[in-house]
Image (cartoon, rainbow, N blue to C red; front, side, top):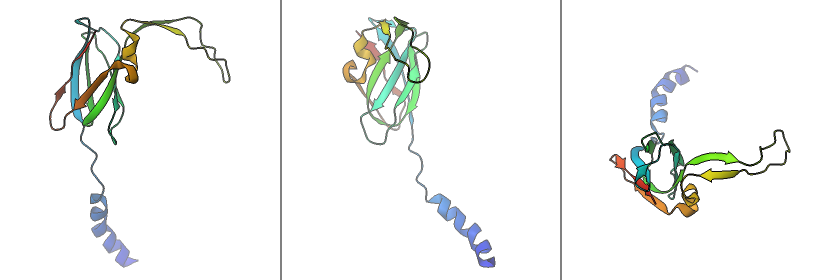
Length: 136
């Protein structure tokens, strides 16, 4: 028992030092514009195309700017800007009949889906990434 008490403090730093460090994230900033004007609200989402990266999103501020910390790699991007939901109110409660409301899009709906946005970007390691998103 006494040997364990002596060896444990000596071995503990070795065991803790064996863990892999977390991958380094890099800052991504940019401006989202539609028809040349900054979007005043909405969100930007990055979906990884490479193994090991994570989905990440950011709100768009009043000047069209966004920023996030993300792993390097390839990403599909979606941008959403919804004016309002209209149609039926979704019922409350478990087992309720759920209806999807209609949406008033302030930018073309294609940008709100990774599969149809047509936006793919690369986040480079070892530097800050300025990635502007001009939508048409």
